[in-house]
Length: 371
Image (cartoon, rainbow, N blue to C red):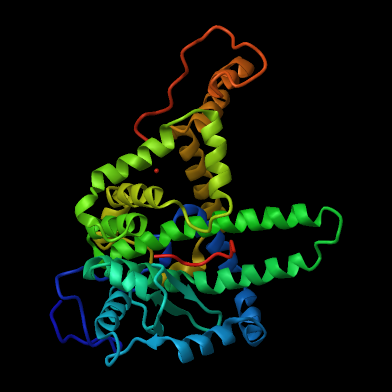
């Protein structure tokens, strides 16, 4: 593609050669757990339409006015380079209607895609100042991926349902039920962030830039002091290190978060970039959005369940290894748990026996979209 080419009002195209994906469905890049939830929601005819009609009762209208009045709207005349990136991302992912984008004064690097009636993208000055052009391109693609998936609609809908549930917390066991909803919501949010990271890679088509961006979000603008390989090694150490106590702490640490940890995101994206799935998309073989109506809920849930099972089977996390071993018929649960906790029990540990290794070849708390 060359400079000056126009398509659906997108007057600018990439400054270097990138593939474009006409008619691409968001199912092409969505994490299986994210995809299964979205396919099911899309089958509920009129579900999002009802809540769009209620948008005037939700904070969305207030947020739109707030950003319009107290942020800078990206255009050909303001933050023109970001406007080019936004049009570029929408061109590559074939999103016909370019969402409005605002730059908000905030030193914390962050970005989000919100809205029921139509998505809007907001990036902070801290993020704009932190990232170089190619890193920022991946972030803009990340947010456009959220828009294409419809995450802004379904996230707002489910948050609204959650706030409704809070009002009936006085019902017996109400708090337990609400926490179950919130926990499930956050798990979906975390998987949707992995989906959007993949969309960012499809837009930028530069895995090193995506890695650098995540590394900067974790460690600041000190790229000369950081190393991508060493950063990914942290993710490996995080997954496989420690004992069962560390596994429990990992779960407790991630439960209140709407986003996966940054090293985990980098490792997951690196793995997807090396996958056959990514290569097929780059070769032009991907699901089309015209076929979204025919997507099978059952098949999507089956794929999601299979993905979780594979994660347990191939994980090097001590708790996941224990679960996998027990599922495979390994015995003496008490002894294995005692040794897994490093002897941190009242009973004396039994004779040590070698563990069965898992497959070594195996990736306020209000949710918001971070870069």
